[in-house]
Image: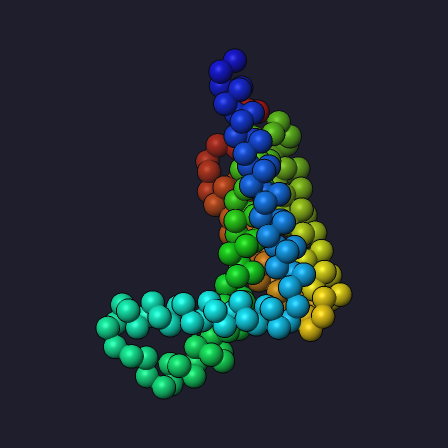
Length: 162
């Protein structure tokens, strides 16, 4: 009985964390282009300060130029990847504990991630100065599928009980 209660608490935790990450994803999608750029600028500034602190030297001009141009795009890509990696972890951990066929659970988890990525880009399509981008869906799914792979496919036991 104690094991079932503990497992039930874990399922509730994973479902709560999944909803929290989805809320973060959708919240970020509703940010206008200007707000999104300011957030990326801030992240680039923080990363450049960390690099200067670690190296003990001022950043060379070429690095400053990179950090405030090309690097912003890399930050956006990393944000998509990371958000969906976390979502993939929590959703996989939740569904891994259900008593469904392994292939059915895995298929549902993958479909769920794709639908969230599709909704995310659809929200951005209707947000000022944002756009629907297939590259973002691909990046989202790479992060998501890496997490799914870690949880579902790298674990040798395929039958879990919940």
